[in-house]
Length: 448
Image (cartoon, rainbow, N blue to C red; front, side, top):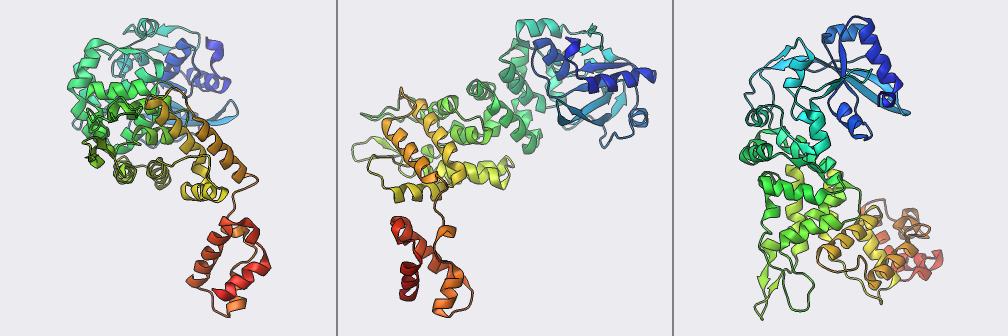
């Protein structure tokens, strides 16, 4: 197992030892080594103080209050930061998130005592010797996530651990130990002390998991979901049943099942899939037969999604993707659609969103109870899209004329009118690409 430790990590480890300090691999790196998983972050802990670490590693950086020094490195040909943290003990947590003060610890055992879960409270020397005061190795073998020591204290110390518990159990496909799970449910309200930036990060990590569906259901079971995406819970018990329709589940169940079957690996696309029908509860009406309908739910949902994304501190680019996918997810497909209609669809959602929209549709279909991921009409639709994307989608820049031609022919100055005329020409040519020639378009410019 120790032969899996990268050479650059061992060099840092040995350099601390050579300077007379005690040092251990710790946390997620040890956990993943013991599980045979790929290690993403290499963390060390030592009795050396931050300034002593910085004196040893001249290229290090130290800009926090928690004793963590970063060492720039290259691992597997990729830039990496090896983090070294001084043993520490922590006092009371006044804000359920950050310790009131940090005191340097005296031993590895003291340091492990402050950690969140037993499987993260295992330390290892470079020779493979294990320090495991909380039987984390056994919990790894039993696939159990258990709080270190008193679960009643762990989540009150740092409320982010509530969400981390769900994320780690989802990633590793571990069960949460009964008392730990109970305390998560009891302390769920404490998540309000955590910034939405951190909540967003952990939520997207859950969505990255292969079994993201189970993670979202665990958020619901523990009561955390109501503090993260309460709008999603409005779909509980909202029936979608109509004669001749495939929907058999309520809106909430359909949303999470759509996530389950969405083939995308992009957490933003999976997030959009999770909330794609979030507008249905507010859009629901009864038709003349007394049956439920959800007219324009995609428009209502897009507005709700915008507020959710802003609350969770999504970037503008992420937010726009989510809104676009939800706003236009009700696109229709039929065998008679023209090439120009396909091109309009591509322009409407953006070339960069075409594959993502198809992935959402697959999740939507399977999450709604259909047995096939794609109907023959959807397959034909996708084929037509690919034909229009080769070699590249027709755009306004592909017109046989440009703004200079308009200025020359109409003898006008540059301004907004130029763009308007180009747009009219583009719409006309897009319906019939044979019109994209200079003679025809110059004649149309004169007429316009």
